[in-house]
Image (cartoon, rainbow, N blue to C red; front, side, top):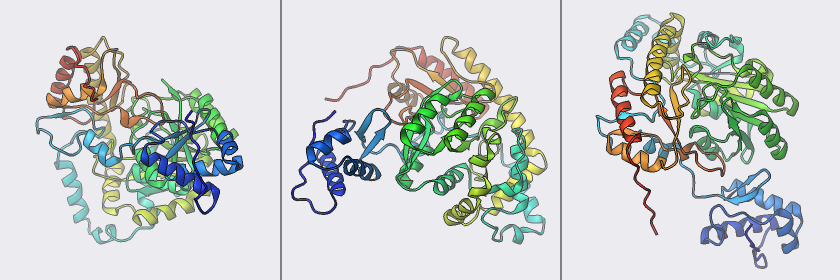
Length: 465
């Protein structure tokens, strides 16, 4: 713990704000370096001659400003420089920048291209239908009923068919997540989520001024006992989780685990935001956790992982108690999901083409999964059937940053690992490998290169003094 006592003598205004301003100045000039722990509330209150409540309010104000983060049972810490946003993550994931056309991208988790013919045919049918003006007209914020019915049918592939009245159409799952957070939280609120998760969640939380509190997970995802401990200790009432094929670890909850999480949510009055983009490719889909407690769950899904990444159509199942706030948030952020895209998604869902595409991709992903396991038998790969990605824990001596750089030299794009981290825990020494992005022939080539790379002596990271 840092022995730090600010001088408040010449500061005007409320004491809590003066303390927060002093923290800001100390962070800026390096007096309080990144990751140092601030004095306890009681200790600083005693040394400044103020109440514990004043210090608590000051720390909360500093947290709202993005200067510090509080962690249950550990204290309040100075935050390091801003974590990667979606824009910087895009660079790390090979989304932008100078990349060889021959590079094999094992970093992006989106489906390989299916060709233009099918999509072009659907667009032509829509144009020739005579209803184009109607398709391009304003839709209600919740989405047209025919599009909500299509969403219900898509979710039905997971074993749950919610009522269309409880569905809202979004501009993709990330937009759905934005809408859910806006409807459930205010700036400064805390959200409980898995201790590692995909970078879209921390980026969104940062933009909305929300705090993320990490919850431990195992091979079945979020641990109920850890959720309860974190919820009780923090007072947080919103939980964001991925029960099926968690990104990045592939963890998937069994039915007992889902029931245990639901029981904790009921007992502690928690609201769940369930994100399920990958479940459609599992050989036997797992019914959403939200089905167990629909009155306190917001369920999110999308066609982006099973049709095309650029078709930004998502669906959210919402409890009646939140429907007004959610629809208002949709209207405030995009007025409505783009009806041309939602109609294209509806056509693919209603005539069965999307289900056939899912089955074809499921077979291709299974081929890739087996090839990956055969190519790296000595590694502890986690890649369950139906997963679009694998989680590869690295042995001692492997540095993910060095490995990523060496792979890029070989026209192989691997993702960073630190962008998945929540909180102050150590960055996992592991890689998330996308099975879904490359075309089939490119995936095989990339896997051969990865096998060679993992079996050669590793360079040591360079330390700059």
